[in-house]
Length: 157
Image (cartoon, rainbow, N blue to C red; front, side):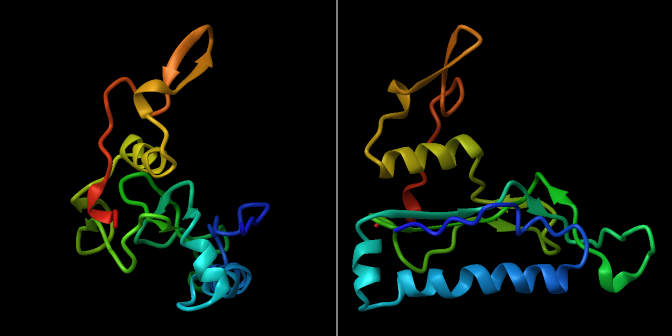
């Protein structure tokens, strides 16, 4: 049971009001149907791992287009704070982890690195991060970097 959206519907550098509404219209109802308590889809979803993520977080300030119309301004990428959503097998439902500063510019509490995020997903898939490699330019590279990444146990059931 997967929800796949081709394209980058969340990459709203301009026109966020219409772009985000369109993205939510395509994802909110299918996601809600898969996680609604008591539904057959929810029972199946608890046996699988679902993840929703983006390539980056978003800056808390507007990115104005060339015409400088503030209503059309979106938000540029933010590598210092991003969000993700994960649900399903062995995930503690309703858990929020991590926090940003007051304006959402940077992560400041219980930060999770990309390798930690990958280690957590691999753990949930019952794969061992220290045994998985990707061949790249003749080298075996670990999926979670050269150091042992940590599994984010606070979100696990």
